[in-house]
Every structure is written in C-alpha cells, then in structure tokens.
Image (tube, rainbow over the protein chains, first blue to last red):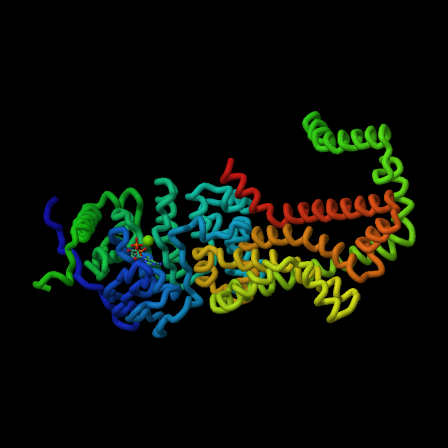
Length: 286
Length: 257
Ligand SMILES: Nc1ncnc2c1ncn2[C@@H]1O[C@H](COP(=O)(O)OP(=O)(O)O)[C@@H](O)[C@H]1O
Ligand SMILES: [Mg+2]
C-alpha cells in the first residue's frame, strides 16, 4: 500500500463541532452494566458530536459497546456518567424525533401486525391522519423494495426482508435523527447496495442526521461522511476519520476511487489494532 | 371432499360406537340406574324444554357467563397492573399463590354466610375460582414481553396505555387465552357446585333434586345438558381463540414445520 496521496483527516479522539453545526453531542459517556456476575464496563469514555445532516458511521470490534452507545443515545439506557445532548437538551428518555433500527430486527417487529400495520403504527400513535399515513407507508415500503408484501406477516418474510420492514418503519416516521445498529447484516449483497444508497438518499432528502453502526469497513467508508472507530472494551474513541469522498456516492465509481481504497485501508488497520488491544488512552505519547 | 368426509367420519366414529354399546347393554341387561338412549333423549326434551329452561337452565348459564366474564376482565386488568410493576408483583405473588392453591369450593360456606343463598354468592364463587388462571397467566405473559419490542415501543414514544394496547396485550394474548381456556371449565364446575349448596334452582340444584327423588333418567338428562353446555363453551372458545391468535398459530406452524 502506497502512502496516502493527501494526508488523512484523522484525530485520535472524538471530533467536536461548533454548536451551530451540532445536532447531537455525546459527552464523557460511560456505561457500566451491573449484573449478578459483577460489573461490566461496556463504555468507558466517549465524546463526539454528530453534525446536522451528517451521516456518521461507527465501527468497532464486536462487544466494543456500539449497541450500548446507540441505546444511550436513543434515551433507552441511562448512562452511568456523562450525557447525550440533542438540540441543546440533555436526553433523559427517547426523544420524539428520533428513530432506531435495532440490531435484533426480527424481534423489533410486532408479529401480530401485518407488514403495513407495523410500519404504520408509530405514525398512527403520533396522530398522523389516515391519508398521510397510507401515503408514507406506501412510499417507505416502495423505497425498501417491499411493495408486494404489505399484507404479509413479518414472520412470513426472510430475515433480510424483515430488516427492510424495520428500516421502512423508521423512514416512514420521518425522524430528524436516525440511529441504525448493523442494519444490513442479514440482507444479500445486491439489496445491501440498494439500501446503502437509500440511506444516503433519505438523509439528503429529509435533511436528517444518521448514526450508522456497522462492522463492515467498506460500508462505513462508502456510506459515511465520518467514521468513528471504537477501541476494544472498555470503550473509548480510537480514531475519528473524515471521509473526504465526493458527496455523490456511486456503488461502482466511488468504490473504485484510489481515495476510497486508502480510507478503507486505514480503517482496516485501525480496527486490527483495536482488536489487538491498542488503545489511544494507553499510549504514553498521547 | 373425500378427505373432509373421512375426517368427519373419524371424529364421530367413537361417539357412535359408545352410544351403540350403551344401547346394547342397557337393552340386554336393563338397569334402574341406566336409561336406554331413546329413553334419555325423550326425557331430555320433556325435562328441559319447558319451564325448566327459564327457571333453571338459563339462569345457570347467565350466572356462568357473568361470573366468567368478570373473572376474565378482572384477571386481565389486575394481571396487567401486577405484571407491569415489579414491586407490586413481589408484593402480591405469595398471596396469589396461596389463594390459587385453595380448592375453590371451600369458599362457598364463607360466602353463604356473607351473602346468603343469593345470585351474588354463586357469581362470586365463579369469579373467585375462575380468576386465578387468567390472572397468573396474564402476569406471566406481561412479564415475558420481548425487551426488543419494548425498546421499539419506547423509542417511538408508545408508552403507558398505548403500549399496553399495541404491544403488551397482543404480545401476552397467547398466554392470556391459555388462562381463559383453563378458567372456563373451572367456572362451569363452580356454577354447578354453587347450586348444590343451599340453592333452590339451577342446573346443579335440579340434578341433585332428581337424584334424591330417584328420577334417574331426568338426572342423566341433566348431566347431558351440562356436557352439551361444556362442549359448546369449548367450541365457541376455540373459534374465538383461532381468530384472535391467527398470527400466533401461523408463526408456531412455521417454527415447527
Ligand atoms: N444488558 C446487558 N447486561 C450486561 N452486559 C451487557 C448488556 N448489554 C451488553 N453488555 C455487555 O457490554 C459489552 C458491549 O456490548 P454491546 O454494546 O452489545 O457491544 P457491540 O454492539 O459493539 O457488539 C459486551 O461485553 C456485552 O456483553
Ligand atoms: Mg451490537
């Protein structure tokens, strides 16, 4: 591998942004699980900002606390210390304009509701009127390529299709922040490419911010404007990398760019380091 | 079509064989205590399709229906409250287990003292006996709510009553209906037993009366009424359950098939 053509924009801590560009801030987040078997420090100290209309990818070894971070961000778990701030307000419970796509997609759908009803439920509860609801549900199902199954039950669908229903539900809800936890793990390669482009499209059209957890390094570079790499557990930010690829991404062209390869290579090395136990907070030079 | 017919034949075969055997034995060696099938049928219509229908059968059924409905409603409501509240659960669980372990008929003498031989006594007996399976199954079902589903509800702001309605209740429905399935025969048993103590009308009372007067075919016909009643209740319940739990049976079929 040759040296990067241009230097990488990378820092070994989470980037913080000026307040006017920031939508979501994570500050000194720490999460300790108290279990019968003892305490588990899943997340030690995380600080970073998520910009307005920014798509940030979060990668890290499995067990590095990605899901924990996402749940704290979503207001579903109370941090042990530190805080999450959305639009200037500390998150204490699930914020209204946030949608989460859970890693356990199959279990996040209600098996007693048909596909369309699952997608519709959050809108119905939010008091969106029937005509608008129907339109949003139809559009979301169309966007994830599931126009043909609105009357099926989720458990009649394949794992990948179930995951797309969960994505459709999140998109139809029209959130301002979308949190996604390894959402494409169960879908086939072609659908995955389509859904990646869908996430970028939705982000652009709705002007929303996306925090996207993945274990796929190619995916993180292709999708993100930024890639935050996490250390092994107990977790800190290993590195925060700016993805300086063109705004318009294309499955073939973008992935063929030399810069894409450089970035991908760099993220790969960092994840390998993280797996081996290298930690920025343990480095005396830092 | 052939398959349907053979299915029907299979279902009715055993009852027919049993009736034929009964007919043969009651004809070959007649007994005062066992009527023949034609005797029983004619007694059945003579006995129950007259004033007794209004005075005994329908009031019994009404008490059963009211008692079981209250038991189901109360069992579900209390079960939801207790199931959703950990403190309330550990507070109430030992008490519930104790009352569930009591054989229901022992409360009849107590209630007779409190309310006398009234409709109230009989309905309360049915409620107190039939509520436990519904209550305890509802608690279990609520407790078993999938944490991912709960996170999903919360993240979309579906909380409180809406969460109960959209997530908890449908999710617990298989368990709740299993509880109701157990509650129905218990309700029926207590309907009969409550009429055997200090009562002056009702199905259970009539059967005891016939027995004391040695009106043997009438007594058997009363038992037939009870059997038919229990069977009808079971069939109706199954139809309702199949409808409500269509998703659940489909899912199970897929998992097991
Ligand atoms: N509810 C929980 N109770 C106890 N420990 C947990 C719980 N959830 C996660 N953990 C632990 O916290 C660590 C981080 O888990 P998680 O956030 O799921 O990581 P990731 O999503 O990156 O794989 C793991 O060691 C895991 O075992
Ligand atoms: Mg995870």
